Length: 541
Image 1 (cartoon, helix red, strand yellow):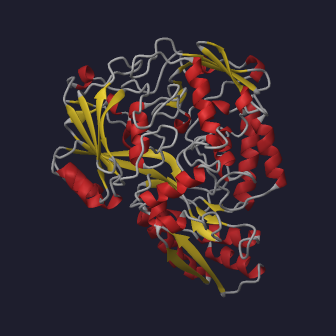
Image 2: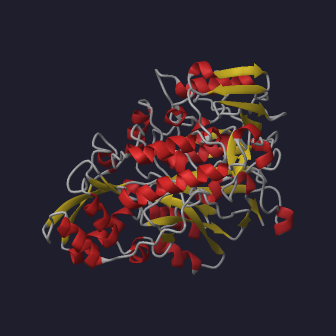
Image 3: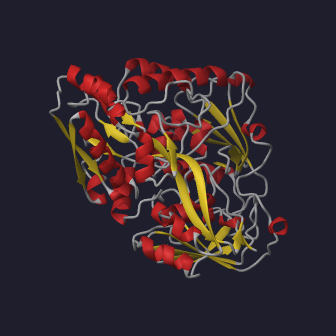
């Protein structure tokens, strides 16, 4: 899911200067045992593997090397920038995966893998993390990636005078804690224990740039080099033949931006592009009905919750929050808002986390119980609330809000749906709405909590605060043993399941489309479109 309106990018970019990011993703693959005996990340991820290796090669798929690949994505703003540490819109995120690399990343199966790092290992109490760099990795200008570049890059991210998008995820990393050990080794000394710090090293906005990086000439270490860039229109890339991972199969990549959804779909059907991101669910059957077209349906843990502020009426009463969760007919909402392309949520996030409690009863609609809870809270068919929504949340957000409003009538609740422009939704009132929606990509539980649920989280939409929950999360963050940590996560999830302010009704599939003239397009669990934009894996058949 991506922001289709540049106004939203401007808002997020402005907020980012105040320590905010919305773009952590995915998972740290923990190894069993205490941190003192924890294997380095390299061992957990299979040596020096990386997430850019093609799943299917041209030889295996009957394809060939060469050709000019054209891809259509959501975009259309003249304000776009190609700074890997600042990207928030789809074109900027897409460009990141072509031009830049973080120390770590994720593969299509949501497993942590090495990129510029060869090995990542914590000390006994997870306060010091040592990173050994990959040998032979070079930037587009031929200069090697060194510890100096890593130190400079992370200092640039957390610069208090101009923090970048990933700064919020590095709140426990002081500038004095970023240390060069030698040309190929860096130490990160944290202000407190963080057993999942590796996840922050995989956050794409926390990428490694060359010392003195200039966004006007964006040099990185990614699989493609920049050839030309017209903001809001298109970006052309040439293959980086010195790339340490899968060298691109194609001779040229052109990413074309479309502000209009219909135009993007028509470009695919008309043969102007070989692949598009963000295929609307309403157009799935249209594309499937066309000869030579493929629809990519990737099950992800991306989600669009309804958010209830627990510090304001009526949602300050846990009985009201529980009632609203029982009002929602999740399967009906998935069918109507997502056209069936999603899977049922149970008011807890991070379903791919190994600590996710799968044994809690699945919530379904129970109107009579909802009525009873509302009556106990003092509302007997007379509750009226305003639900703020926007297309900025996602193409299905407004439809989901309207479905909820209709379902709530059965419980005697009037929900007034208020649709606002993206700049308003994510403007000064963002995080102040009493009842609203939002969106998140796939994350593990502790990383998500740090971004959206901790009392000081930059995006605490529900204003959640619970002492028992907080104690569990803090203990989990400092716990190296994976089994113990998973148990603590499950206990924390149970509290949110019972008392939280989020209605997590579903996890949405990522729907993209491509022509059968190309291969290498595979489902990816991250929620990032088109195989996480790993176009170095795409090839012509």
